[in-house]
Image 1 (cartoon, rainbow, N blue to C red):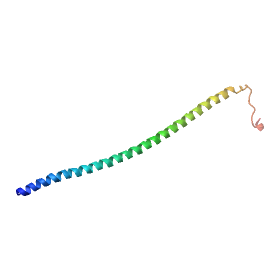
Image 2 (cartoon, rainbow, N blue to C red; image 1 turned 30 degrees about the vertical axis):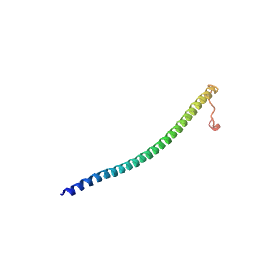
Image 3 (cartoon, rainbow, N blue to C red; image 1 turned 90 degrees about the vertical axis):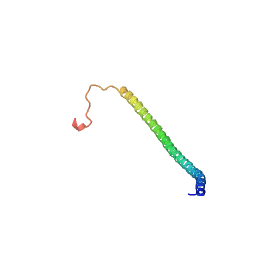
Length: 101
């Protein structure tokens, strides 16, 4: 290898290596930007699902509270009605079917 071709090879490497590094760095930056956008979209979708699930849970909890209130209020009212009924006497009850008496 002659001295002249050696010098040209060195100069070529001095020029080519920084260009290759610059192109590679630019490609890496673009890939990072694309990946960041993908992750942002995934996070938005997950956040939307989480908000929808939280709203649904809130609606279900409200329904359970209403059902509990109905069950306890009706139970207390029913107990009060039962307590308010007149006491039955000790006499035997008449049969409902007059043919069986």
